[in-house]
Length: 159
View 1 (cartoon, one colour):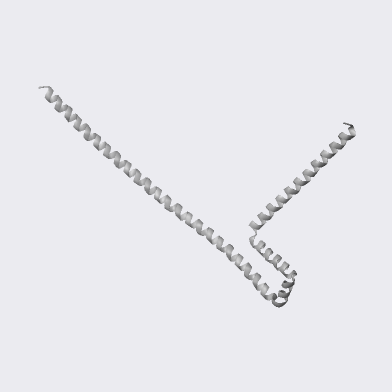
View 2: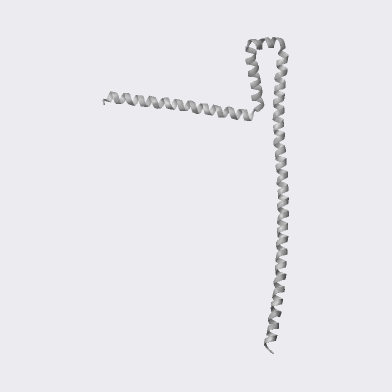
């Protein structure tokens, strides 16, 4: 292989590597753009909803039926847009209320479980103490009976 052929082969490898780097950077840029768009939508849901309504109205105004509708009922389109925005805001408020209700219920459940656990611990301690007292009492009684039996046996064996 001549040096010119080697140079040409090396140039082709370099160009292929540069193309791969460009493609990779485009994919990374697209991924970053998608992530930032997702974050914006999560942080600003009302602005996103408003933007979607405006874009929809703008596209609709560019069509022939949309232009006719705008001439006839521009006020109606404004009212529909306002209603859509109000509906979106009310849905967001309801979602917040549901989340707060869920937190309250979890807090109440935690309190109930905590009270039940303390009660069960108290009952277990009481039962353990009662069992311990009963065992001591039985052991003392058995010890007394055993010592009396030994005393009686000694009395019978030695006259």
